[in-house]
Length: 80
Image (cartoon, rainbow, N blue to C red; front, side, top):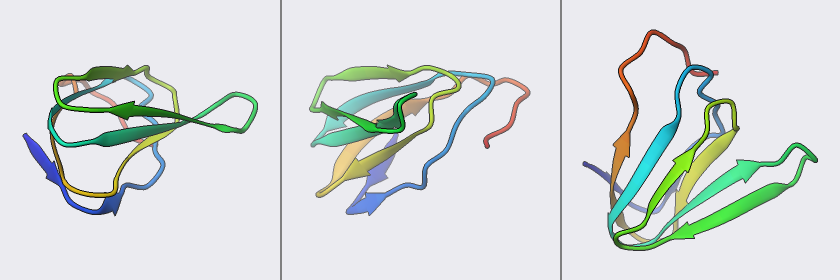
């Protein structure tokens, strides 16, 4: 489990695996860059699960505190 206070993570991309977010408590927003160069935002609350597909540039953001489970498969790979 990961706890996230008031924080915005840096933009990043996983080239070899998907990111899976399960919100345990609180609110979490996932920002993803679109192919057109815009930003798509997905708001998640307690009990919500969201998958960021491999190759999609993204970052988790929260204004308060959120508790969430971040699932990343154990694979040989890199984060760009």
